[in-house]
Structures are given as C-alpha cells and as structure tokens.
Image (cartoon, rainbow, N blue to C red; front, side, top):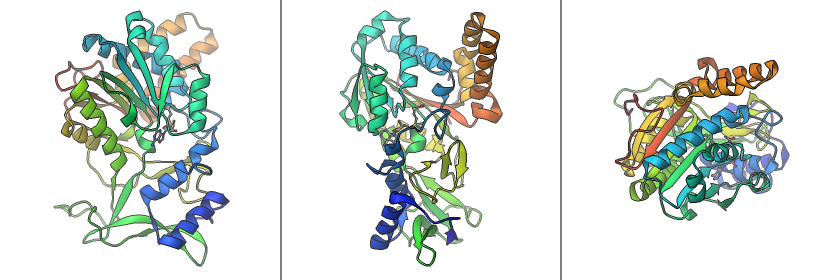
Amino acid sequence: MTAAPAPADGPLGRHIRDLIAAAGPLRIDQYMTEVLLHPVHGYYAQGRRVGAEGDFTTAPEISQMFGELIGLWLADRWQAMGAPAPVRLVELGPGRGTLMADILRALRVLPALGDALDLHLVESNRDFRTAQRDRGLPATWHDTLDTVPAGPLLLIANEFFDALPIRQWLWLGSGWAERAVGLDKQTDRLVFTTLGADADAPPLPATPPPAGAIAERCPAAMAHAHAIARRLARDGGAALIVDYGYAGPGWGDTFQAVAAHRPVDPLTAPGAADLTAHVNFAALAHTARAGGAAALGPVDQGRFLDQLGLGLRAAALKARASAAQAAAIDAAVARLTAPEQMGTLFKALALTGPDAPVPPGFAAEPAR
Ligand SMILES: C[S@@+](CC[C@H](N)C(=O)[O-])C[C@H]1O[C@@H](n2cnc3c(N)ncnc32)[C@H](O)[C@@H]1O
C-alpha cells in the first residue's frame, strides 16, 4: 500500500472512509464517481471550478477564437450533411457555457442553420446548468445523451471525456490486479491498494509490461463513444471530441487531481480537487467504428486549430485591437497551440456518419 501524505478531511472524506469500512476498497471509477458527483459534497457540487479563479482553465475560457472556429467547423459539417432541419446540436459537459455561446455567435454566418438548430446540453451539475441558463443558451437540458431526441446530429465535447471515471489494473509480474482506494486503519488515511483477480482484467499481454505498469480503461467513455456512433450511423452528422490524452496503446498512470491550477494528491481532501484521467483516443476511435461511425484522427490541437484558420482569425481580431489586446491574443494563440502548452497534449477526434466527406482539419490524417 502507498500512503497518501495527509488524512482525508471534510464530509466527503468521512463518507468515503465509511463506505470503505462497510464494504471494502472502492475501485478507482467508484472513487471518482463519489468524489466528482456526490450530490452534496462532490467536487462538481461545490461550484466555482472553471476559469482563472477556479481550479483549471479550459480552451474556450482562454479565447473566444476556440469556440468560433469550432462553430465554423460545425457549420461546414451541417452543409456537408445537406443542411437538414431540424438538426440536433448537442454539447456534452458545457461547463460555464462559454464554448456554446461562442459557437452560436459563429453560427450566425448561416442564418438558415440558426433556424434549423435544436440545442441540447448534457450536464450533470446543477450549478453549471444554472450558469448555462443565465447565459441565455436556448437549450433543453439532459442528464444523459439517451434522452436527446433522434435526428441528424452535430455534437461537441471539450474536456468532457477526461472527467469520466476510469478503472486501473496494476501489473504484478504474472497478472493484473485491479487498483482500488482502501483505508489504512492505523493512520485513517486513504491509500492505493489492489483487489483480487477479476473477470474484467485486461488480457495477459504477449510481451510482459514493466513491473508496476498500469493499464487503464474508461467504460463510461466507451459507452458514450458507442452511443454517439450509433446515432451518427443511423441519422448522420458529425461529432468533435477535444481533450487531453494519448493516441496509441500504452501503460501508465494518468489518474490525476488538480486544485487551484496545481497538481495535488488524488486521495487527499476528496471533493476539494478535480479528478481526471487522460483520454485513450485509439480506444474511442475503435469503439466508435464498432458502433458504425467513421473516426478520423486524433489530430494535435495546435495543428487542428492552425488548419481551421486560427492565424487568420487572430490577425482579424488584432487588426482592431489595442497593443495590450493584441498581446493577449498572441498569448492565447500560443497557449492553445504551442507544443509545450496545449498544442500536442490536447487532441481532436472527429466521428462522422459512415459515408460523410472528410471534415476540415482532418484531411491528411490517416486513421490511427
Ligand atoms: C472540465 S469541465 C469542461 C467544461 C467545458 N466543456 C469547457 O470546456 O470549459 C467538465 C464538464 O463536464 C460535466 N460532466 C462531468 N461528468 C459528467 C457526466 N457524467 N454527465 C454530464 N456532464 C458531466 C461537468 O459538470 C462539466 O460541465
């Protein structure tokens, strides 16, 4: 067992320790679900999370250009679909609603699309729903994608998949054991531990991984990818998934916690920090194809935004900006695209109906 540096405090820490005392260690996905989504003490129930004052900043909160370019990408996809009306515009996990507000502003270039749009926001958090409503977004809200009506689909998800709970398995030399959160009774600390053999463990690899390797899976992400793909195969449309993650298979522990823009221990003070994991884009693409969709990418975010015309949009904004505003625009471009910032860690994956033309930003991308 590896001890966390300090006892878990607060009512959620107590609740989690009670759960473990009563029923044994929690799998990582169970722990993430309790910490993020507990209706009273969970991380998302605490408000304030996104933006400079919160725990993390997302691309749409960095610059309006991000949402505007994605809006134009969606408008292009609508035209490529034959301009169906109505078309369901869906966002998964809209947070403060900034991305959708920027998208809707960009979509005004096509008034006919404005008339055809039927907006649906899938948001689990009540405070975020209130923020989205207060922004004037003309939407219907959902707890899950399942209740969004059928029909041609345009879907966007930015930093949604990283928030979904993962499971982890630790390589013990001859087999996998599922990683879990247990309780060190002597110190009352939450600690990482492992469970016994289980039917869900990954297959034994042909080449054994290094000792201590960790395999991750995100069943909730795969369920979402499959549900989106089935809709795209049946009704047509396109989905754009943007997140931080990796493109190929690999071992490694990507379970992480962030508070006030700094990494913190995921087992300390549960509910006071955001818990996420890197997105396995290869697994998402594979699952989407199995569900009947085409999958393109992932493309690095920097390259994707460059191809959509970020440089031109920045130049247009700078043409009527003050020197200070122009410097802020340059800084935002660097933050979104520079390899050492968000440019390569963040990636975009496109899912489309099976016979749709290749979307902008993915033209030269071989499927991975
Ligand atoms: C990291 S924030 C991203 C917010 C926004 N997309 C942005 O880019 O600023 C994650 C969002 O997903 C929502 N969320 C997390 N898990 C969810 C779930 N299972 N169902 C619906 N929404 C969820 C959160 O409430 C939040 O709005």
